[in-house]
Amino acid sequence: MVDRSAPDYSLSAYDYCLPPQQIAQFPVSPRDASRLLVINSSQSHHHSYFRDLPQWLKPGDLLVLNNTRVIPARLRGRKAGGARVEVLLLEERSSHQWLALVRPGRKLQPGATIYFGQQSPTPELTARVIATDTETNGRILEFEPTQSRSLEDLLNHLGEVPLPPYIEAGRTTPDQYQTIYAELPGAVAAPTAGLHFTDRLFEQLAAQGIGRCLITLHVGVGTFRPVETDNILDHAMHGEWIDVPASTVEQIRATKARGNRVIAVGTTVVRALEAAAQGGELGAWQGKTDLFIYPGYGFRVIDGLITNFHLPGSSLLMLVSALIGRERLLQLYDQAIQAGYRFYSFGDAMVILPEATAPPPEAEPQVDGV
Image (cartoon, rainbow, N blue to C red; front, side, top):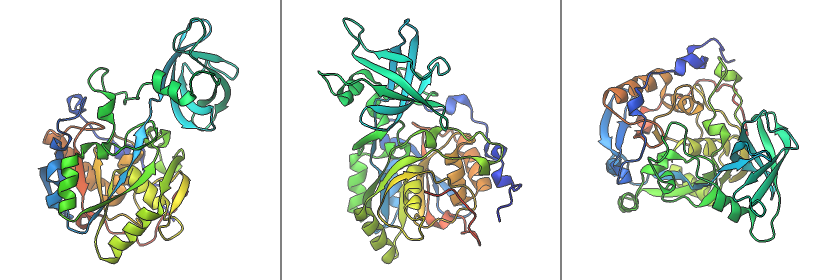
């Protein structure tokens, strides 16, 4: 039985103070020149650089990466009277229907029409609000088909890659917010732990006998929406689409059979793999997951994690706390702040190696499932 009064379940327990100047506004160049905080035991940590990752891993280790690609999900339009509207597409519901966050939301009720692009002689793209989504407080938009161009082509033409709100406009380019292995479009935010990899680094890792494989989790509102309940056990994750292919499952099983380690690149990979193992054993799986991982969770698949530094009170911070312990994680964050690390999407990274992870709980608590 979960003790709801335990400190690990209070939202305020996941707060910390970050000087604004340490919020990274642009990535370093080259990408693997970012700093890397290495946690390689239950007591020690080291300051390194991401380009030195091979020296902290072992031959036979397997990196699992998320190959989702960020789509140009932000659209700027107008209502019939000329008032401006901003739309953030979250997920495709059918060939012409999308779940979206809209601003101003209260004035865009079902029946409202939004026009995008050039308005003369006719709008390039038109969408109608057909329903309200209570789970996200978003809107279901239905885009009108056009004869000349596909909806995908128009969205790519009119949309913008949505950068996080704490990144100042004009400080970076859309390509910098994609991993170099991004392949399958569908995310509205990048799996940022993967932004540090370069082709040169992948070559060095391969030469050392470190493998890699892929999953897909299309990052959506479930990942980036903050936890707002005082007790985190009351938080409900919004479902996100994942694909854990059979080829990846085979590589993971072979790695573990050899006694080697599975290292997730990013919290989205952790959620995808652990969701695919909720039946007790990892298997190929495709669908939506609302898995919420917080302290007390017993990991079934991953052994270690490469991740960025996350926002206070975020579900991502809680996931990493489940792996290493909340108190120690916040102590490491304090050390990183004192050492001048850069935080959030374009910031520096940490690697949590298996020797540093918290021991599994005696009895696994209830968690939200797939």
